[in-house]
Image (cartoon, rainbow, N blue to C red; front, side, top):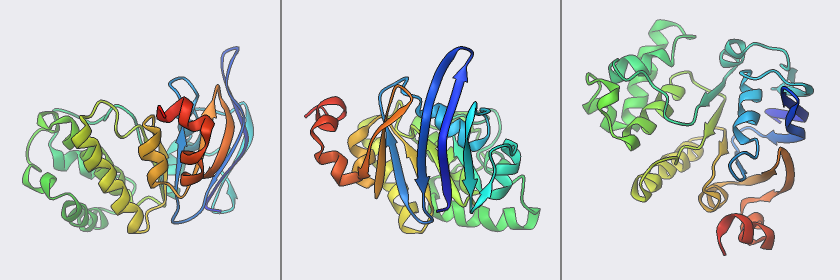
Length: 234
């Protein structure tokens, strides 16, 4: 397994947000994590990327124990997170935002990767000199995903990429995620739109109140009666 999380627990003060959570993602997989607001999805991603310090548990990456590694050390290893809310630097140009994603890599490699990313997202090429804050919501989501790709991730952690987007734009973003998966990018996708996430995922987990309550293939969870009632509105 590329990423292995064993019995992860996390506390906000006296409140336990994660309870013995175990998940894994193999190289080349797209694995989804679904659940209601407040279930602990973002907390789990933050724990994997090193933003939050675990109360207990073990995180392995490529077989190495990285439980106590810093967040920047994890980025250098290839763990790259796209945070929810399209966090980017609005006054800076689109290109400058992209180049920030390559800050851990040699400068000459960053320029080469930039060309590849702009081929994937031609809209960004057309607006590369503009302030990022002038982009639409969907374009900003493409920008932050592109910025993450500039780091040449071994695994991409996507946190609620459809949040706040119109349905047409959501389809576009998920089309890009599917294309990245087809290109061999390993993805751990956290998404409140359960149907879209499960439809695209090879494997998936359901998180409730900080605990994994179900797991299986994406299709198995789509067909699960509990998932249908609780998350798919069926």
